[in-house]
Length: 184
Image (tube, rainbow, N blue to C red):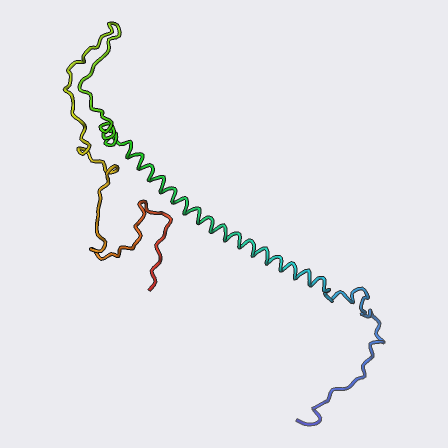
């Protein structure tokens, strides 16, 4: 490169801005304190945030309490359903023909031997056609009733290797109880 080809930038004198005519920027007096946040505003925001957290904590606590109460009521409902089912089974057992025959026999009743009719016109007792011989007492063992006399299965838990302190299974299985997950 030669010195002749290389030129340096010229330093031309600049005109001062004061000579240019145009709007000048200045700070408005009312906006000087606008950028500052007052301490009252900070305290107000903090109180709002603390109140929001307190309300959220209170509502969460109420929801958890309601969940426990709902679970307790569901368990109580399940037990009442079981008691209702047991009461229905007991009522069915009491109303069964086998139980009624046994109760009648215990009261001293016997089956009728024959039928008789009252003739209201002549005020006489008329024997029915084909009189039947008197029947003996009803033997309730002829027709077994599993509801009245459930079969008894007495097994010794020690014989088959089970421990004796296990709680027995409920008579009516629960549809709400879930088995615990197995972890390995």
